[in-house]
Length: 257
Image (cartoon, rainbow, N blue to C red; front, side):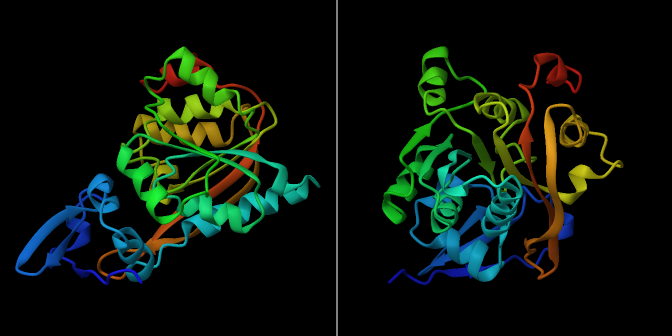
């Protein structure tokens, strides 16, 4: 049985902080530790803390939502979901992988940039992934890229990792280009990144990519990703589609990357 952790949210309003600046206090006896929500390397070290924080307290549903729209999209093409060869980018401690396995997926490889993510997966969900790479896709060398591409992926997933520096655009594009043409892509993104009022390079790039010649869009759905520390809903878009072509370096450079 997992230990129940004492988690305390600060009295400061979440709206006064960026989503990547939000933190919680972990009470351990007489010691109080302040941990940012995006300090995944610290959270993953503590068994059960990630699940208790994001899933029990804040009601995150994104792995099941993204897996569900991917499965639905594949069924529209009368293909066998279980036969997909999936690259799970930003795999973390394996929650998305576990969700995909529940749905009968046979071949699944995880990638993350921090060793603590791999350690947590091996500790809590051993066997979910056929392989797990610790790799920076912004600085991947030719040998490692070839090793990963040798799995012949025809699907990529990434959940709750785009837009806050966790997975930079270059890493997302690198993974996108590794999967085969006509392969499937499923991911989620905070709703504000698809709003025209956001003129950042990342936001403009994602808006254009979703409706570009590189992606054949099958599913776009706004949903409640999780609650804020104040109990207010945070909305994301879940997106699924088919890759039509590799994304060119020129496309990235147009947005300052």
